[in-house]
Length: 294
Image 1: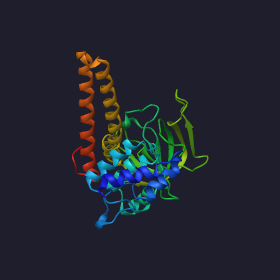
Image 2: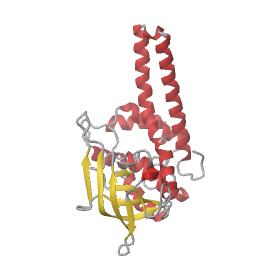
Image 3: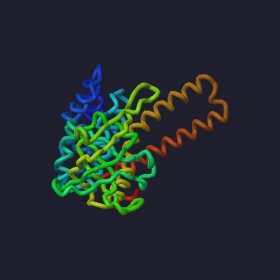
């Protein structure tokens, strides 16, 4: 059985009728599908399957086409894990990656702030050293934090040098979300009635560790964003491409494709999706390589 057939067969026989997001993560983890292809030291893995780059692409393609549920664990798998593989210590990788690979822990991303949406250098959340625990005390607010209500952990970009400005003096911190009285999560209700995004308030929250060393948060954060804008878009690209295919078929059937303006728009969408796919594949091929071009 070739790899694509194996993936299709497994998905066909395991897709849930009524999705339970947490249970689905654990089922994926038990089969070794989470973190497929993560590099390990000396041929070892963190509980994930070994996979070549083409096999990783096949998995993403077949998952997107199967109608499988949206993943709750994608932040830990696609963002935190490559960051730890590149910048984390061996102890951090051994502590955090196996639970992600087993589908046991969920992560959220603490980047955007009310006054610094896409401008990460404007971050005001602070983290001061805690001499008692050896970690940090985090105070501030994050916004548009996906899955914060469900997450077990959060990686947070915070200012550890109080006299610093812009991209200097930032650190990439890890903390547990279950800290009553220190962390409050408020869902942001959308027009659809859902609340995927959240505001997160830190009031003396405890962060246990930093990734990449204190003051090097900007470098780590930029490395993560390079992955976020590549790997995590591959499955999206596949879904968009299939949707575009249906639009093209409808345009041809209705005769709308004879309109040169519509044809030009469809061609442009195809070109943009092709660029999106190529960038995702390039990024996937450099995951875990800190010296790779972005």
